[in-house]
Amino acid sequence: MRTEELKKLDRQHVIYSWRSQGGVDPIMIDRADGIYMYDTDGRRFIDFCAGLLCVNIGHGNQHVLQAMRQQMEKLTYVGPAFGTEVKARLAAMISEVTPGDLDYIFFTNAGAEAVENAIKSARLYTGRHKIYSAWRSYHGATNGAMTISGDPRRWAVEPGMPGAVKFFGPYCYHCPLGYESQETCGLACLEQLKTQVMLDNPKSIAAIIMEPIVGTNGIIVPPKAFMQGVRQLCDENGILFISDEVMAGWGRSGYWFGIQHHGVVPDIITAAKGLTSGYVPLGMMAWNRKLWDYFQEHPFVGGLTYTGHALGCAAGIANIEVYRQHNLIEKSAHDGEYLLGKLVELRDRHPSVGDVRAQGLWACIELTSNKETRAPLAGFYDSIRNVSAELNRRLLAGGLYLFAKWDLMFISPPLIITREQIDESVAIIDRALEYTDSLIA
Ligand SMILES: Cc1ncc(COP(=O)(O)O)c(C=O)c1O
Image (cartoon, rainbow, N blue to C red; front, side, top):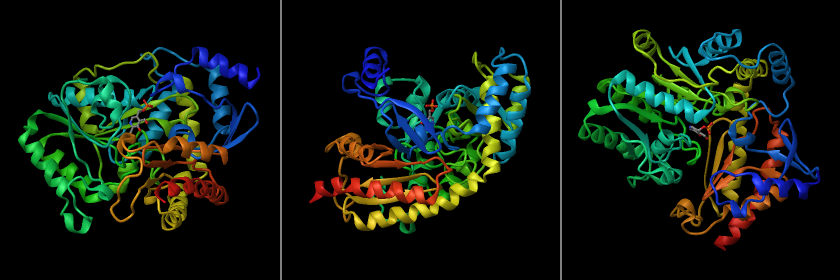
């Protein structure tokens, strides 16, 4: 089918995420290989976003495809009450890389379901109902996960799930408490959270859930001491600490899991995306020993038709083998420093770039209209103007796909990217930023 006919068919039937359907005009992707995607007209794009931050090992990896083919010939799916070799082996492989005693795995279809099951586990285990989460956060699009998300996607489900409580996490570039620097703030945000918990009755709080590095709300890296303080606060009050690693996990931030940056071991981990690098949808929740022991005698009231899907588990095993064979986690850490160096050069050259942040091959460019005051250019939820539409248009015209919204440009290439390919991609961004610079001039 020609591109126009395909597009017509698509626009007659397909519903797209997060937007009014009228303006949808998708690029029709035909195939992908390594860090590249090709559209139906043969145009090539660098996938500088690894799909939606998931294709960590790159597109078309033959080791994973071969493992999937073999599994499909043998068994693609069996009911969740049965055990399979791939389910047991993948759970064991995951337990080798999760921190501490997070060795017990429940498989889901994707990230939001992992979060739902974490909420449920925490409530069942503690007998409490409140779930604390940060204002600048995203935890998924199902009802509970969306209610605990701080970002505007939550608004559509309000009032949502009862018991969801928000707090201000650290965001040092725009400190919500008005402090200029981490050196002088005395971790005021941690003190504020402690006070909030005290006033709110700690014995009503089942869990605090956090992204160890905030993802779609700006690649915000919390100070280590904040995360360690949250761990202590949880311990002192019988609250569970959930690390939502759906985006931060699987090498994206230069460690297997983002929480390892902070030297903290949570009680529950949720993950998805890089678990299979998107070859098959698969998510997971990991419990620590405390939860595992508790649920020996108490029912875990959770289930999914496709939990532990054999094809997904086979893809997961092969995917972890690829991470190991090619040292992709270490590579993410090293090349992330290289990428950050390139982004710092952009920041120093472009008046519209206020801040650049990176952990591993996971970075963000934050735009500003004034470097001194750090005033936004687009504003939260495009409250001043929409910048990302034209920015995205220019990036795509230059042959680069990344995800940009409001004042934020997200960078998360497949971890296999070479330094030459990073240079090529940053050069395309460099040219596109002439547009945002022109808005200030
Ligand atoms: C931190 C975090 N949690 C949960 C989710 C939801 O995952 P999924 O879209 O796979 O349901 C996402 C998705 O981007 C995420 O970034």
